[in-house]
Length: 205
Image 1 (cartoon, rainbow, N blue to C red):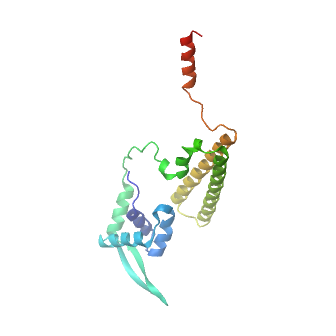
Image 2: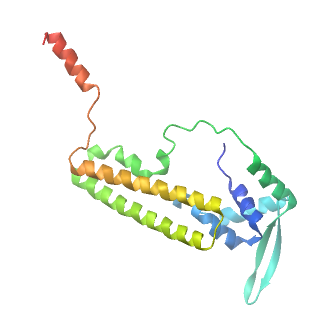
Image 3: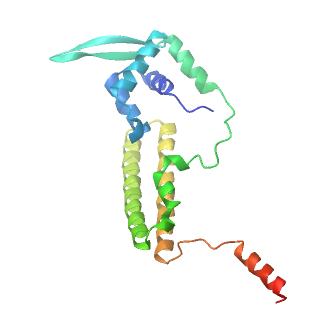
């Protein structure tokens, strides 16, 4: 299954109701990472393409002492497009085994931690654990707000998935830190005992 495109995300939000560009940007921004910021240069060309395709309509609303704002509404064709996409059940492509790897720069660094002094490894992991804890607290706050305003239960479940992920990530970091503090920075080789047994056998021991 292909990742959800920006166009599909916009149409999905407009199914909920008309919105102006700033509202769409505010709702969509959390889904984009720091490396792919959702700026006006990304959002408004996407809206223009959807308008040219007849999937959304745009109207200008005058504001007192402010520039007119553009309010976007999904068209009947746009609604058919997004609801048709939602109703499909597609077979997901087999993911790359380490598809999670490129999304977490810490994992790439952990691969080469053995080249760092143990003290530096511990310092990095303590900092990462604090960041993970802060992320969990942020998710808990957002979840409380969603519950208070009786948000869409499916969207709430998506946020809960994120909270569980970050709690698991924090637990993994703390476990790695515990190992580093105990001096268990390298996993024992499973092949070493077999090699040693083979050598003893060759010596007749």
